[in-house]
Length: 232
Picture 1 (cartoon, helix red, strand yellow):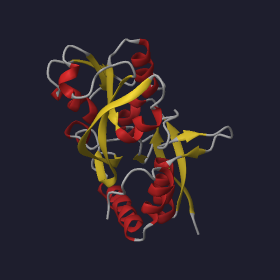
Picture 2: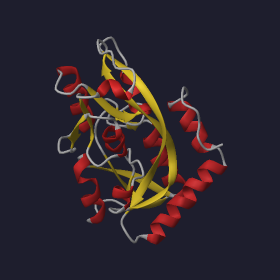
Picture 3: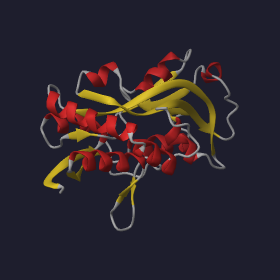
Picture 4: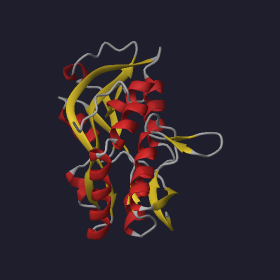
């Protein structure tokens, strides 16, 4: 029987398919939504979503607003200083998106260009490695930091943006294209508050079980069939 105590999962309330979005009835769908639900099922807990802006994720986690942060968190040294990461539940490469009329095809083509990425992210670290670019950090203070970056690219406020391939592939359209992809193999993890060793152990156990029994593979292939499953 499922415990009535909820597993409170901190996340963003914005459309970012195939990772997450809400339908007209308010139900949350996508790969990360299903990962959270599977963790809850293994732990015998129902999932309760705690919506916060991107810049408020770690303060909310530290304040105890949620038990778990599960929302596009690539495992970086900076983020690991703010919370304790689980084992990865996803691994992605990083892509650079430009307007369709751009001739960008490699990092050197971005010299002197304005390149956007989420502040303090692995994507920003990659942008900073490109020669002679002007990095433009997006700090997540709005309700939709990813949408802000895409809007800035379309408007010409930036010349390119960097994000993980899973987020950018669905955006390719007449006006936007992926210029190139870098095989960085970014590992994404869920996060618990610093020092919560019991919670970390329980969630890692759930993820281990999901990988071992194939249930994580099932939802990966449901939502991201074009991307290779990384845990074989």
